[in-house]
Amino acid sequence: MTFGGMWAELAPVGRDAATGGYHRFAWTPTDAVLREWFRAEAQRRSLDVTTDRAGNLWAWTADPDAAVAAGRPGLVLGSHLDSVPDGGAFDGPLGVVSAFAALDLLRARGTEPRRPLAIACFADEEGARFGIACAGSRLLTGALDADRARSLTDAGGVSMAEALAAAGHDPRSLGRDEETLRRIGGYLELHVEQGRGLAHARDGRGAAVGVADAIWPHGRWLLDLRGRADHAGTTRLADRDDPVLTLAGVVTRARSAAERHGAVATVGRVLVHPNGVNAIPSRVTAWLDARGPEESAVRAVVADVADAAGTAPDEESWTPSTVFDPALRDRLAALLAGPDGAPAPVLPTAAGHDAGVLAAAGIPSGMLFVRNPTGTSHSPEEHAEEADCLAGVSALARAVEALA
Ligand code: HGY
Ligand code: MN
Ligand code: MN
Image 1 (spheres, rainbow, N blue to C red):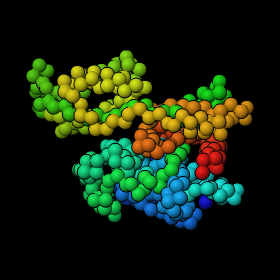
Image 2: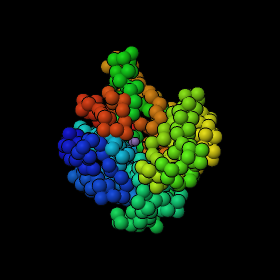
Image 3: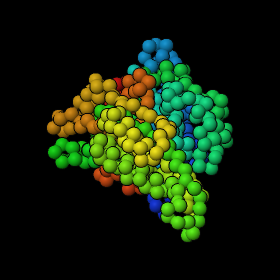
């Protein structure tokens, strides 16, 4: 199955016909279709598919444990297939499809890697349903506590444990998976760029492929703002205790603090209770996503938000700054040099990735970015040209030839 063929097969899965965006949430029937697609592609290539304790999928070219015993643990490629609400087509799937296509390229060339390769599909990378990003890789490495994960609930009150069980994955199995971790000698994730760095690279001439340098520290905080329910018409302004008014102050303060500290802050998800047009709300639940080049900048934004809210936000997840292995980074950049011999552009990102979680767990990890002419992500507008996607596939194959 060619890159284009795989892409076409995935395109309709979880797609919103009205917006063109994707709704591919963890442990849902749509997720089950995606996991079935992954297994079929793996079987088409005679790969051996295993599922780890967190529900991440691994498709191996050869016995990974024999390689561990021989002191040459395998090289893993991959990414995720889930999306944010109304997300783009490329964030995640581009990495998984490119991994299969790169393997096909290597096999067509008769290249025999010196160690097993795996293609990984990480579960629940976006955290769109249960609120914790990179849940699959964090559970794998132990960065997310299994009991906490099991008790996370979605908007309908369904726990992750219930969702896992309904999807046929035993929630009691969640936890750090030493056996799987031992098998990973290195991890390389190809991802659509979530910005316009490559579009502007090389003095504006652009580059199809780049290499990741680092991931900004970032986190998610929950704000629980209480007020007093009352009638929208009969309640005097002076008598109101309206949490949406507090929220308005929080959002504008988060923006001004982000500007002041060179960070970014977003309140993208808000629940208003009881959510009636003619009822002053009694409660607002809102989530802050804050990121910055330094942890201190992010913490300063959160402190400002706490001051504006009159209450400390509850930290739901924190991802420290990730610096990818400089030697691997530079080797990839040199390997993927442009026609003029200049190394591939090296870019930081403020987007979190499973590669960052594995790097934080001590696994040699790197990322390749594929040019996104819109620079937009987490939106139906996210895009990558087919020629750049194919350049990404050949770059990934070249990297595997050198690393495996
Ligand atoms: O939120 C992120 O940066 C990633 O897309 N999960
Ligand atoms: Mn994403
Ligand atoms: Mn992603």
